[in-house]
Length: 505
Image (cartoon, rainbow, N blue to C red; front, side, top):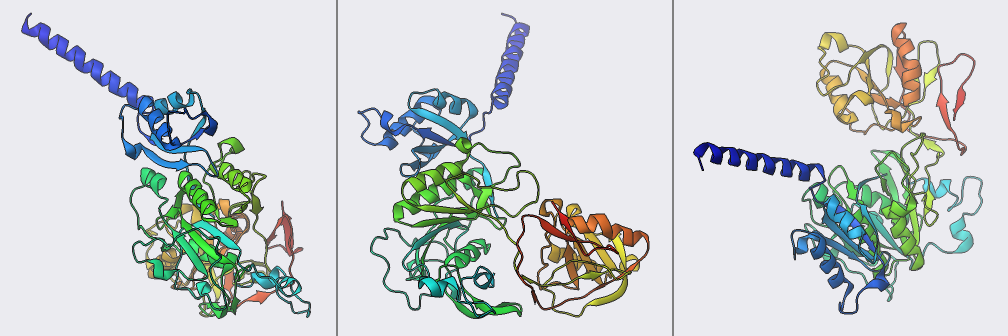
């Protein structure tokens, strides 16, 4: 055979290999986390444990036989089956086997006030009436609340155990040691803390701070809201000084860290594993402020949270979950399965006002935790709030800068700093479209007077005042408590000469 023939054969072989690899890549060659739902009763008798059966099934469909790292979790309490890293082809092969009910890909979810007890009528109000706590003489005594979230900050006064008796004998959980956390951080209030629920997150993102300790603050916030002990004189930078207390202050807390990173992301196979362990440990209630991060309607039979919640309900555990922070818009409500007590957002009878008064005397509703003086009679300027602003001090100097948060990838605090460095006197931040009519307070450490306004207010009306060169004032007030009103719709304050409020449906 000639050299030329050898070269031709080599090129043909190389091309075939390249095509083969491209085909594998196109067919979903990368391994991703899946939950494999199994019919428990179908386990062959020659397997002593379900885990052995699952490992055998994995060996049969994967090219990497006997690789224990592919099996991420085994579920046997609220779900039946396992989580594993699979290619699309391997997932399809598993789903065709006897005993397999469904193979569902995992996905990332995201995590969705001290005055709440008064607002909800748990304690007596200004009218002298008794609250529910006094009427029923119960504050969740010895109820164990399992919080699946981003962990806990045990040093918080909300988790002190004064007045609580011994830990209920039915409790089977543990206080796991990790970075900056050990068993001494648990007590009669915080009776359990686990963090070994990160396999899915690692598959999507990577390693993280391995500890029950909460680095984002979200988990500590939700845990204290549910069952925090009373903290007298709690306030936020001097605002809203009252007694901070959870809805069931005599209940016990067990935390399960399944959400990770400063951005607080949760893989739903990790959340399901945490829920399973919580039920095994003996919690009475599961509290979950997490929801799917998708803008589509997920069937209940494909919803990992719904399936896990259904299994928990079957075991006698009550499941409460948040409806989400977004809206009002289609598909913005999460966790709507009938086995979940879905808790929606509500108006509350307290605001931290920083209204934007327009040149003709009308105003836009805003709120802020800024504690400095207000700003008066200054012109607005509309800029693109990017990470550099791209404007010199002569353009911003002496003006209130209007920023559209949809244009920016940085947080409000950094935006305020950039505006100040550019010579601006204040900032009005128009919230994102996904936030609807709500206004979100800017952090109190803001470098200058700043207030957010709703997406609707900002985009429908503020531009008119820029075009007509109107000047504005921004006034800051400590806080306002008004008569409570709750409505299915949201209110929108309008710069309108003949109306103060317009309902937004």
